[in-house]
Image 1: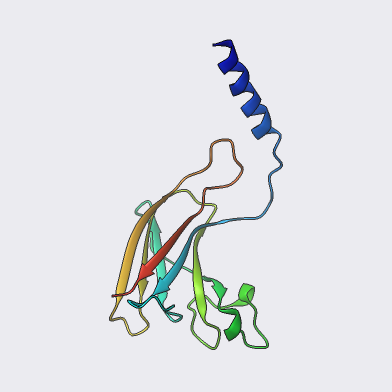
Image 2: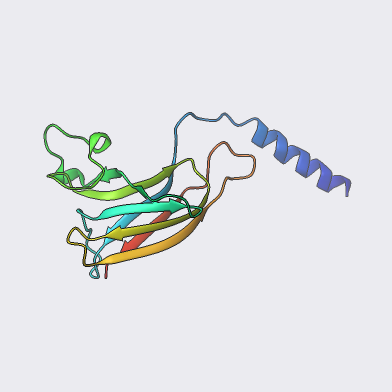
Length: 137
């Protein structure tokens, strides 16, 4: 029993000694594909958190080959529309709880939805981010 107490105390010291970064992590990173696995660049993505209001999800990363000369991945618009092709959307920022994420095709005929739980790592500074791949059908 004495050995277990030493191991537990040692773990707490290691976690307490970690430096937290100020980077905000996306709670859920979402990619949207069609039935063949090809990215759907112009989808609309939205989520609810713990049954709350629906929020539109901004584009988190665009296909680098589609970047226009005046845009970058960090300044892309939320919808993925335009010349830059969104390949990942970031739902929430450092938020925990149950996310229901829904993607809809640009023409509104195809949808996909999934639920994922985001928690905080015990003793950690940040959430435990999750990833989803939604297949439009």
